[in-house]
Image 1 (cartoon, one colour):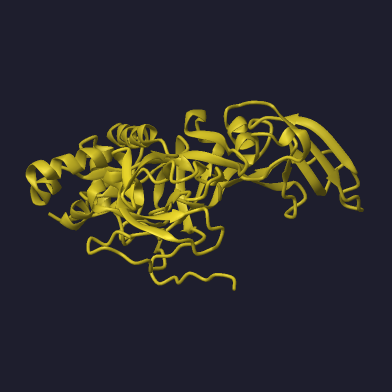
Image 2 (tube, one colour):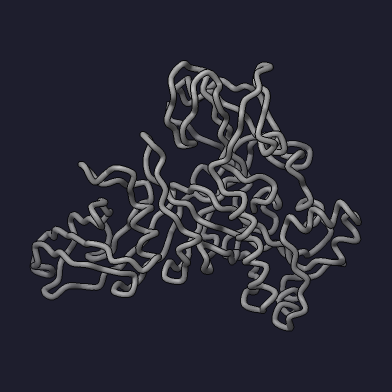
Length: 382
C-alpha cells in the first residue's frame, strides 16, 4: 500500500515505524518477495564508509582585535583557502602541507582532528588596510573556539566506481592505493549493494534537502555532486556499469563523531578523508523495495588498467560486486586478488546506527525540495 513521507514520519514520532537496514531488506525479499516485504517495512537504511577526497570544511574563526583580513593561512601547516570573507576559510581534504611535515598528512587529517576535539595550530598572514590593520596572527584553536565549522563536500557518494589493476612491471601508487605489477591485485572503492545510491538508482527518493547520516551527525544533500553523470550506460535494473550519479553534501562538523570521520593518506598519491554516510529510503510503494532488493551479483563495474596514464584507460571488461567481494576475479584467464578501500564492516554499521536513530524517534525523514538533474552529460577538457 502506498504511503507518504508524512505518514512515515508520524510512525517514527509514535515509535511504530518498521525499519530495516538494506541488508535485512534484501534478505527479507529473498524470503517472502517484494509485495510481502513492502508491507513489513517503512524505512530502509543504507550506508557507506569510504574515502571521499572531494570534501572539505568551511570555518569561520571570529575576528581578532585589531581585526585581520586573511591573505594566507595554515592549520597545522596545511594551507587553507582564505579568498572569502575576512576570516572565512575553506580547508580541502586533499590539501597537503609543504616540506618535511607533508608526509602522510593533509587537510582530511586536520578536519578529523578538529572533529575529535584536538587543538590545532592556526597561523595567518593578513592584508593590512583601514578596516583590517593586523598583519599576522598565530594561535591555537579547537572546534569550540571557532564559530561555524561544517563540512561542504562537492563530490561524495559515487553511485558506482571503477576497479583498478596494473599490467606494467612496476608498482603504481594511485587514488585506489597500491596497484601491484603484472596484475598482482585489483582494488575497488564502492562497498556494493549496501551503499546508498545503488538502492535508488534513478534518484527517485534522494534529492536536494534529503536528510542523511553524515559523519555521525545530521547532514543534507545540497546539490548534485561534481562529475554527476546520470546518463551513464545502465543495466535493465537501472544500475550503472561505471561512475554515474554523485551528491554534494553539507553537515555540521561540530555534531560529528570521530569514529565516522577519519583522515587517510594514499602513499605517493595524497591525502583524503573517510566519512560514514547513510541515507534513509522511505518505503512509499513497492517500487522502492524492488529497487532496493538488488544484490551484489546484479550490479557491475568496469576494470581499468592504470598502467596507461591516459584519461581513457584500456578496459579488461566488467565484473560484478559479488565477484569482487569473493576475493578473486579473473582477468584474461588470470586469477587476481581483490580488495576494497572502503570499509564494508563500517558501512554496515552506518546503516545500523541510522536504523537505531529512526527507531528511537530521533531522526525523521525529509521530502526533497528539488530533484537532481537526470540529463547531465560529461564534459572533458580536450
